[in-house]
Image (cartoon, rainbow, N blue to C red; front, side):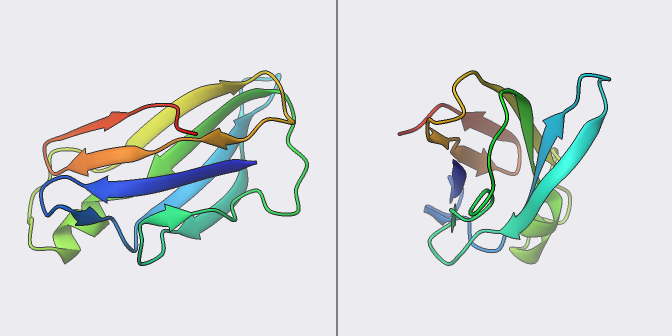
Length: 112
């Protein structure tokens, strides 16, 4: 299972309404979309891989941060999107990948 959540460091609130795309890198190097979703009012997105079997390999989460920041009064955020690539070596594990975001920076880590 792959889950995520977004925390808005500028406003000190969960990042609700952020559009997220999950992709899987194929052996050919091409990226295939696995799922799309939007964070809930608590900034969480827990159903990206619900009902799906994960494969071992490289995955990428892309967060549409520009649209989110513009909706909250930041006309020109520096990062239009955030992409986080990570490895799934054991598909039976839970992978939680949070994003801490502001209009001019971001941070991430492997959560639990």
